[in-house]
Image (cartoon, rainbow, N blue to C red; front, side, top):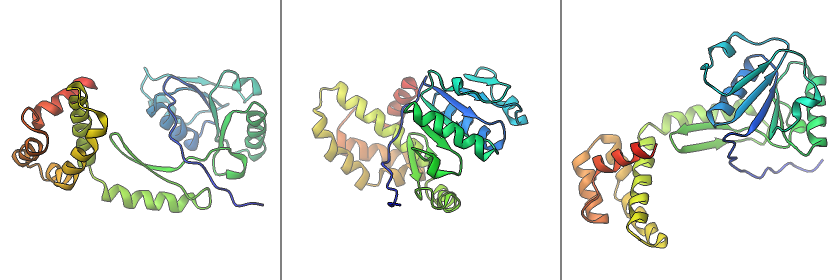
Length: 227
């Protein structure tokens, strides 16, 4: 068999209808991950783990308490099979592939047409780690290492950079002119200054690179408004 080479992508699943088959702890994690990305999630299972009842009441989660049927795939964007029944998981895979759907079967990479990486999230920063299904445990190990390396300052840094970009665009700056400005901010130690909480030095750097009118507090306030 040829060696598998995956094509890494980041999917926009906001308001997409996604299906999870299974009601245990693994299915719960998959459903929570889909919800976090803005999906509308249907979960089908004869039984559900207690954790499902702790998902926020307003979340777009729809539980159907019965065995899986192939019609559950109707009008769904993707399906994740997460049952403890290997025969059922492979049936889900066959049904999904016959419909040209995106399909992931937990811990069975050969039955998938996409795999889910271990992910480190810091606000808008997402770092995905994949071993192409060879060792999910090692991917989780690397994720824990990276979680210690990338702290909460990365969330704040990206919010600030996004606010700067929006302000530059509003000022009719050509997008191609932004790159050297952002590189100067990065090379000037903006991330490290944010981590150290040195607001006055951040403002000095912003003014030196971008000119007057760019200060930390006003930029972060505009970032809050955009959210």
